Length: 189
Image (cartoon, rainbow, N blue to C red; front, side):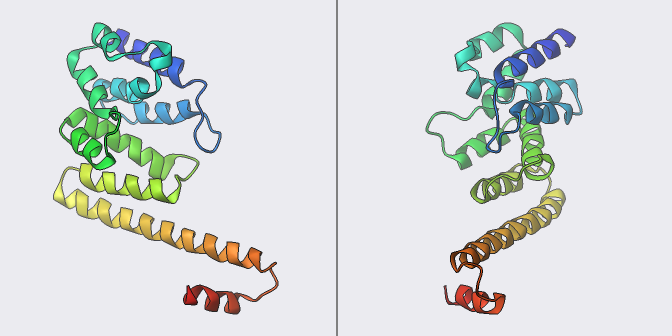
């Protein structure tokens, strides 16, 4: 599996080295964190490869290439993690949930996006990730615990969204009104 791991690392570097997230940070850092979150070699290899099919077509990376160099179960997990053209997000998450290895890697991916990444995903994306986590986390007890944590994150997101609206209104009034008056304006909306 050492050769497969090295190839997975090389493919990930090839695809993601010049990619940046919404905030200008190297996307490769995210891939490294997802891969190294893996507790097994299989999770690590699939972590390195989790976005190569979606982002690697320009580099000649195809499903066929992966089948030539990796065991079938690795490619199946990567395929499950690859969103199909026109596929809705809920269907995508349900498909991931059918493959245990893909599910575990996607949880690592979502945890990184939600909690570890140096930048927060935008509100809509954050809510989508929270919903996916609630679907993918496997046991009822953990789902309840994670669900509560994620609900708190969602509440914080809504709070931040409200604070942004407040700040926008405050700026639109030239910063000349007091906070009490602004709060009254917000309540009317």
